[in-house]
Length: 127
Image (cartoon, rainbow, N blue to C red; front, side, top):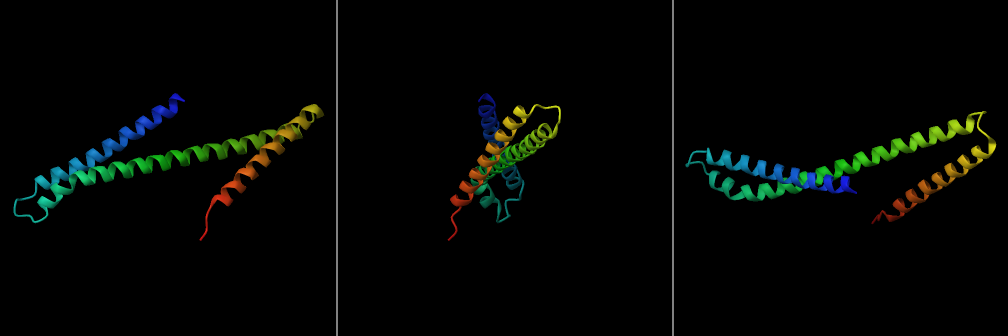
């Protein structure tokens, strides 16, 4: 639970830093423009908006990346589980009672995966 809180805090902090850094950079660039430049005042005016926009964008990117990493980890763990369960089932030194138990657990795991996938597919609205 603490890892989740730390991850959220780090994500919020990094998005704030990204936004502030981007907005500050834009402001510095604008202030270095000559007074005669027609865009200088506009760049100074929109710098706070850019700061907020960059922070929101960074936060969104961070969440998407964390979700991708979690999904990839789950996918790899599922593959390891299937591989190891099948190794146990194929091993002639393992008692049949244990193999039966592994087969039941593997079947329950596969059913749960199918149920979850079915629920996900049905939740997608197509108009």
